[in-house]
Length: 136
Image (cartoon, rainbow, N blue to C red; front, side, top):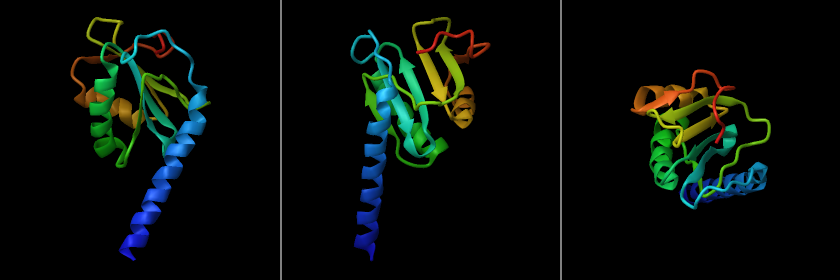
């Protein structure tokens, strides 16, 4: 029985990865340097965090581990070098680091992630309005 559960879990995660790959083409192309952008996705919720900054890939790897445990309570998909979101996904918040406009996060379909970032991500600040910020 234990082996069957492990096989079922693997099949579910494979389906999640395939689903994310199918939905990922809603991404818009970008001119950022490799490593300067990435997306963290929670496919079951169609939630994403798009990051644009120097060494974004490293941030995404670390942030995805924290969000997987504290917010989503499951595995997340990280796509280095790509900014994308699910079609129709609503912007939950946009943030910038310090006084710079060069480091930005855009969170979609996850107000919980926005609350987590406000509490735990030192130096990150919400834009005053979602419409007034520059989308990553």
